[in-house]
Length: 197
Image 1 (spheres, rainbow, N blue to C red):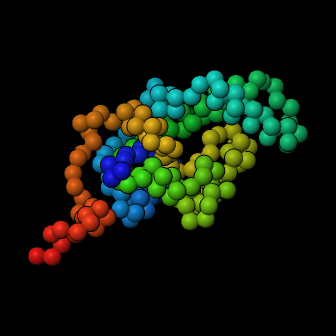
Image 2 (cartoon, rainbow, N blue to C red):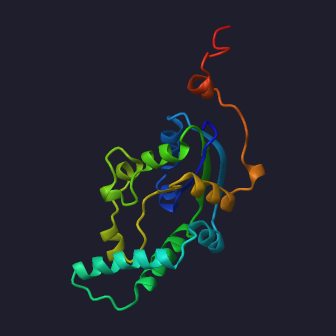
């Protein structure tokens, strides 16, 4: 449990709004440790592999988009799958438009801890106190009106299996550093061995 890993991307909006340090500090304050960092401009292929979406996902997301259109009095003129593909394409376009900071964090329940700190996908409805709620005011409605993906600062893995797969898309195993952080003494050492001289 102490070695659970999760994957995080600080997206172009986080980079260009100078929020990298602020967001990283929120993660570090929990006691999770950084074990890999890479500042890169992602490739299209890397993003498509990362998102790993299938036709069922495209249809599901496309149907949601169509329902929102109908609620606004707009008649959809494409199949659901096409709307879903457009949404993925928007995400890929955004992620490849600028450098991003890809990271791996490690620690007890790393996936759930990061997910809780980041908040829900839509900043407008994300819980107060989360990164997405505290640092951006974007919403699905505004993004849809502008014809772009929602700018929510951070991608984080939803489940352990997804984290393991995503980490392999962005990092080679030898790029992940194995070390003992001093915080681990306080968090995990039952006897606090070596704290007193």
